Image 1 (cartoon, rainbow, N blue to C red):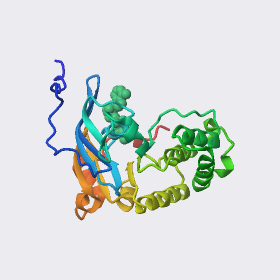
Image 2: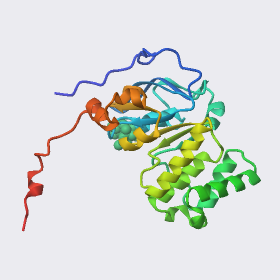
Image 3: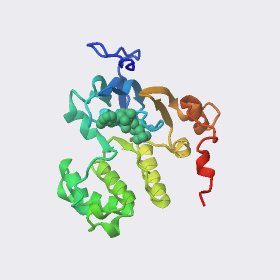
Image 4: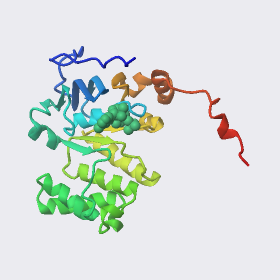
Length: 275
Ligand SMILES: Nc1ncnc2c1ncn2[C@@H]1O[C@H](COP(=O)(O)OP(=O)(O)OP(=O)(O)O)[C@@H](O)[C@H]1O
């Protein structure tokens, strides 16, 4: 028997029970929906990211985090739903909304035959900055990311962590008001990660908004003011970190919400020596 067909959204899109978009929010997502063939990756996400918050997006593998962030930043067109960036409809007015965003996408190809310094200059010029401003900011960012010694190395020869750091620098060079970072600490060494956390913390203290997706609950609990737990394309809970974890660790709350822990009884063959 064939599996049941995935529900078809109506012509106006799936209904969203949430109120109108919040014009004060850094990001206000309403009824976001995206399917790939039969797979519904994001099934009606309503989410407000308060301006000035350090917002964590957590969820198991395949939950829909990257798809949600791609739609929220103008990289992937939603099937249904809206995205407002500080009150502006991103998909209706990208020329207003996009310059407010700095984006670290997951897995997007870079112009990796450029050196780190060239890539950063290129990103700054593409954002319309003048050359002296680009030069000064690029220098600051290379130092902040511990990449000054590797500025003239082509990015294709960077390690995974170095590539992550130069991509993060590219996301920041135009001093956006909202930073949306997909897995910013993945593959980054502990010292660089601490430096990046400091930079992001200061950015939020100065009024910026940061959204990060992460699988590291402890990091999100320590670093973020707000969190959303997403699974199966739905938001299961969202709010301040303290409200969401409700006296437990964020990790315990996450496992309680998402489930999926298995007893260690399986894979018996793995414990059997073959010699
Ligand atoms: N381009 C695509 N084509 C087909 N299916 C896709 C595509 N992009 C995502 N998906 C599917 O959509 C679902 C959500 O994927 P997504 O990458 O958004 O999850 P995620 O929460 O970011 O996962 P992870 O934590 O593993 O990075 C998954 O089932 C994935 O296989």
